[in-house]
Image 1 (cartoon, rainbow, N blue to C red):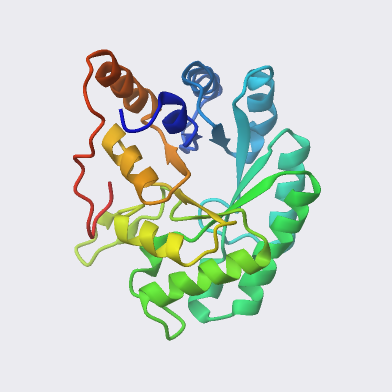
Image 2 (image 1 turned 45 degrees about the vertical axis):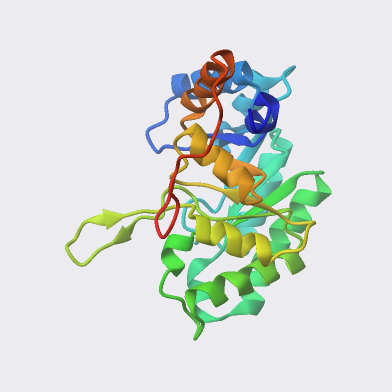
Length: 260
């Protein structure tokens, strides 16, 4: 096998973020995360304390989303959300940038917004993942091409103290001319671009559309160290099947302009 079970399981932030998630779903999700030995669960602010209770005594940590899913909260609200999440047991923070400010080219605001969350989180020994929501940036903005905008955001995030840059929330649906909604999430192109646009001290997280083991392996091949996932059980059960049968965890996914 190309990677060990632990290497792949420790990439996964098991996502428990669906708007309809019940208390029972949260409990099942935390038990699943502990059973499979993943890196973390990623939960909504109100669920942080309960997730920390459920995972006490396990190696799975709790991550909490901030300004989720569209990044529109005022900076002070994001700071307070971060403070409360850390006090409730979160040791990782997944914050969404203010997308409209980025599209406007208000770089000072964007950097201050990120830095405020990073400073608060780091005071509690928590790490920060900064979410761009790349589906919304596909046409560029602030006079920049799509790629140049993402590069600028990587540079700003690193300067502001981010520990990771992250592609997506999983909820960045874009309305098409026919009225339907489309979503790509993480793409090979964006992961390569973001990895190349940060120094080695900033990690890269993929989110959105990584649905199988081959996709998870591809994320690692491209330099990603974390991956938001809801298909955790399917991915890791597939790994165990391949390992037990002597099969190879070769990448079959074809990643291009689209997602995983």
